[in-house]
Length: 352
Image (cartoon, rainbow, N blue to C red; front, side, top):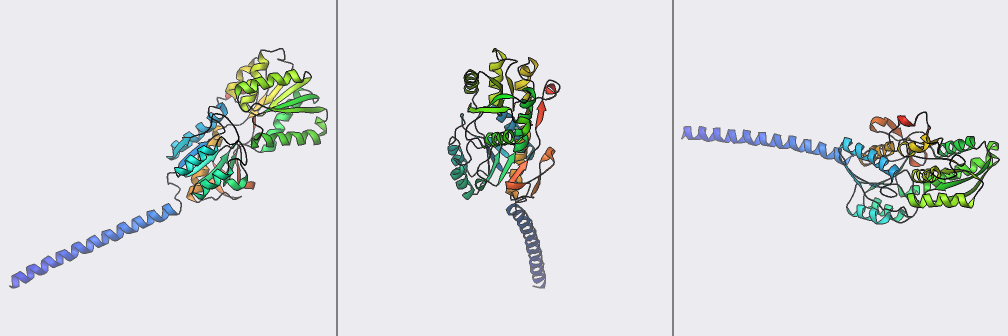
């Protein structure tokens, strides 16, 4: 019987040891799980997110470069990247895509708005469902989003385009603007600054802006509008086209017309699209920035918003890969960089 009690006691002792070890292991596991959970709920920067880009329209060469930058950044961060959007750039054409993304519980919707207000109701519903909203390239009303990723300071864009035009027409003569859509916030902002500068700068007192027309960011429409513009204004000395689609279409028309070398063209263009027109003398110079950086900045801003390391207020900063640290400025806007002038001396250095 003594032997039996000792055996029983030994068995009980071993059982207690197993229970103690199991309890300790469970406690450790719970502690680790608790740490991981608190990091996730607090917005861990390493948390993978889903980000969907909604451009003004699909199959736009400029937009393709922007989206390529976003895709590369999402690949580097391990996040889920997608693109949805309309084939034509109309005011309300993006709404149905926003609604679908809301239903899918996409973490971040990044949109280049065709109209500053037409998409706001859909975006506010997405926000109510938990999505973060970022605008890029073309803004909405600031109450509809958390952050705007802007390529450059709007006034700087206006001034470089106007300066390039003025120098080539010797600060005198009739000019016109061929823009994208009538409701595009980025183009309208640049045009407004150009008008202000024309009205206030004595250097430009002999330059007359005769009209602003729209090609709807469509190649064929822009080509036809440029043709009609020159027929309607026979004394036109120059055209400013602050849209990559518009400037390329206008250059194509000018290059084979009697206006080549007589009507000055400048604006915002992609080096790869404009190279042939610079080399054949149709265009002397134009401007732009690297659109891929906009897509890249948008992805890193999205991660920071979801992580909670920024809220979009002025003074917030976030790391954006090779772009370094970017800062949120006034009106919850991030400026990625400044404009670059392209001409025959440097255009072959760029490939986008």
